[in-house]
Length: 167
Image: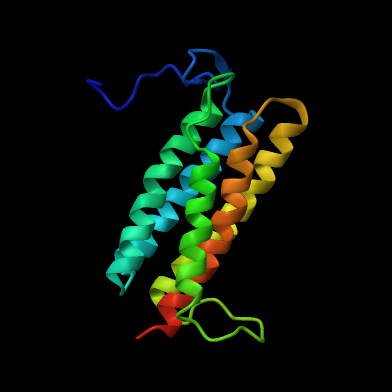
């Protein structure tokens, strides 16, 4: 790509990966736009994370999010995000949870910078999941993407706790 700008979106339309032009405010574009916000919030969390393990996990998730955005922007294509991705998130959650104290109260976000950014990412993931459900009401989506987002919010919560509690 020679230039960052193309001027093709100046009239309120953007292209999906299939080449189809759609309004920038369409539910599909909203959904992958929200996931792009998750990616940015996770980038902040990774920059401030104090544990190398957390940085590695977040980096992997960010790459997965690119695949998920591609799934959403590619109507009627085979999913990149599979059940294996969902299972991997569950395994990471279980592994990290072993290092944490049992949770018996609500947590206020922002115990540390990194946990605060992870909590921000978690709340954006939850919005992305709601966007995906709304999109699924009228258009086709891959259900694995919805499950992935559901587990990702749990993982962000767990990683925020990990950053706050594990020394």
